[in-house]
Image 1: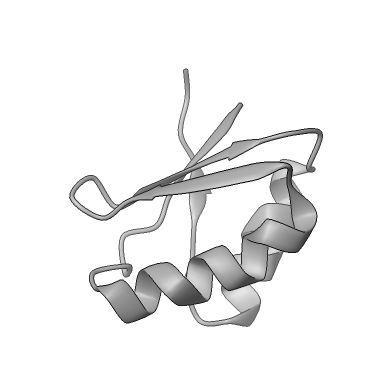
Image 2: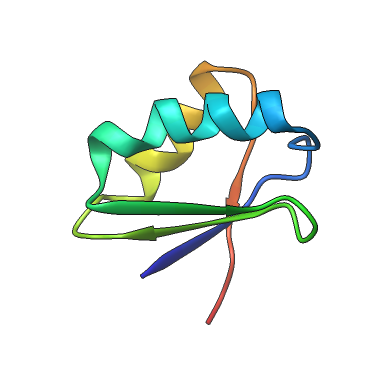
Length: 65
């Protein structure tokens, strides 16, 4: 599982945009708006996930652990 910090994600619209961008790249995506984190399951490349989020205006970084 890959976890990403997405600090600019703050509302339901943001969540929908993030899910729309990442769902084609992974087997499962979950969003925690309170923590502003995204969990991604599957063999998706972390750099590809971060690039997909940057392309829609949401800078992200990988979360350790």
